[in-house]
Image (cartoon, rainbow, N blue to C red; front, side, top):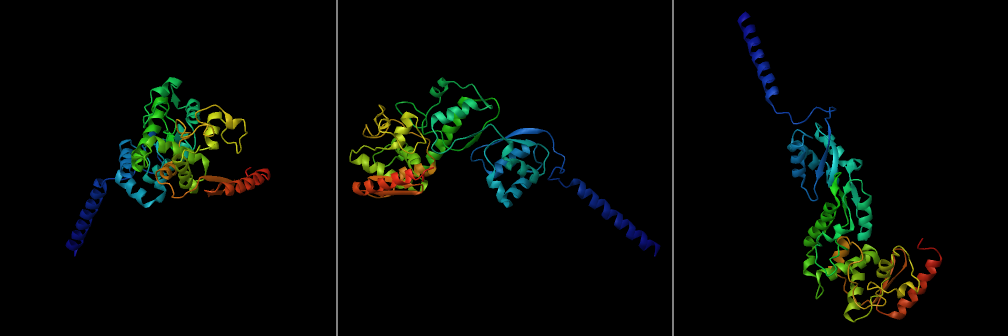
Length: 335
């Protein structure tokens, strides 16, 4: 009896040693919760995969196991909202804490948001006012290589609309390069280099830039077709957006008769054909519309009220809709 009891105690002791030893040797996959380390700058690149982000987090000391973070991110749909850019994030976090900090937009530094339909001058203003970017001068624009070569070496239309984040001290040229690089990557995905029919990629981009400003996304493809239809028959484009660009009158609903007579190659009331450069930075939807216009014989379009744009090939019908537009304008429908 005494032997048996002693044997049981010995076996139990061995089991405890084995269990303790296993617990000590098993790799820990998380830092202890609630004990964050120092705050660092962590960059998420455009298009970076989830697994690559996880590996980079581990190398930076933010998390202990890239595998654990990646498994969490796959299960948590919020991880799809991690924005590219430079994030402030603590080291020594659990995977869940790391995800929470990456999703906190307040921790994104040096943010510059390029809106669809913005212009080069809009972007320049943001870069000049950014506390993260340095070294801007007008001469820098000449050092940035356009993604599509053009006679004016213009960057207009090639600063892709997106949210960018830059670490403090980043050179302004690097910011422009990043925006042009993003445009180049998206253009390649969309096969912009193929152009459309006999129109070059740069001409298609110019058409997309006008469609972007002229209407809602649901109408981009029809507006692009109207532009192509007018170009084919040598009809002036007569687009207010090009005059607004030339005269810096963007945002004005209607234009005066005198403004329509402005001497500028961008005045499509006075000049036949396309303006010399794009007039805005179009988004992906606008570029796709210029590459794939909706088939139709329309030559005229008018937005009679917000959300109600009408298309026709009959000028008399257009003239009737123009009356409706002026009535709605006077009634304050466009305020």
